[in-house]
Length: 115
Image 1 (cartoon, one colour):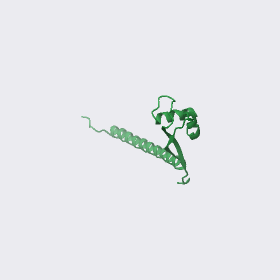
Image 2 (cartoon, helix red, strand yellow):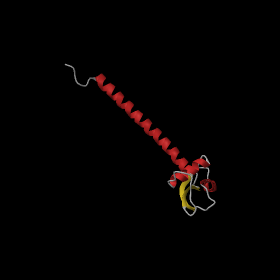
Image 3 (cartoon, one colour):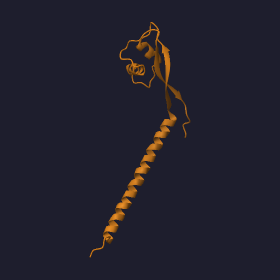
Image 4 (cartoon, one colour):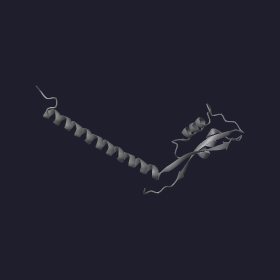
């Protein structure tokens, strides 16, 4: 009669167990390394999205308002105009004098470089 837990079976199971432990340690170590890098990048370059209300005058267009408030966080002035339209639920480029537009902008704050 054969025993339930033979020596080769026990050795095989212990090797699989050791392999799983090594893999878990490697995965945990790699995730910690990537987490540390992302925290350092965020700490050195802090940008905060804010909004301001801009009154629309007779001479204003979406282009003129976007040009006045545009910053390098957006890839193009057209992308920024689309963002202003999204913030204000506009389906066209038409704006009316006397109304107000919610305009997104970024503020930069310096943080300590060595955290």
